[in-house]
Length: 90
Image 1 (cartoon, rainbow, N blue to C red):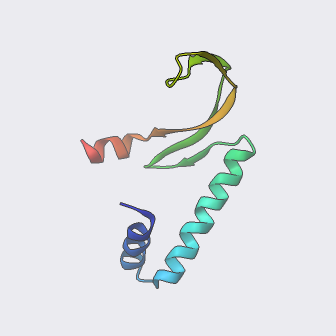
Image 2 (cartoon, helix red, strand yellow; image 1 turned 90 degrees about the vertical axis):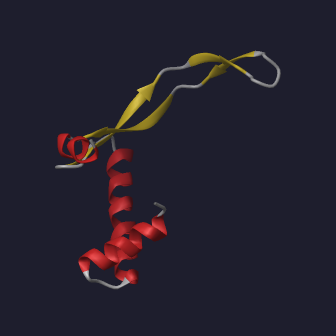
Image 3 (cartoon, rainbow, N blue to C red; image 1 turned 90 degrees about the horizontal axis):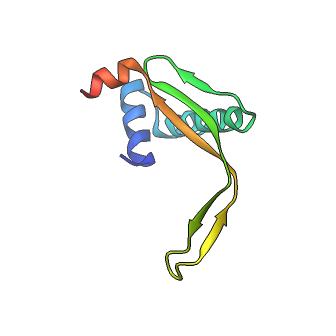
């Protein structure tokens, strides 16, 4: 499912226009992104938790040349599925 299909599904289930559904989805994504950027986690009960993990600097290989390279430290988003979501898909 892509973003357009998700907007269509939200509009149908919530009985709102596609424009409204798109604005709500964009606002939700923006709010979640801002929270994660500020180091906060976002928990949606029954769905899961989004958080940011720090990945340490590590070494890797350039696949084209085989040369050893250093991969910089970075913050990476992480999602942990909640119990209800896990049960729904199993």
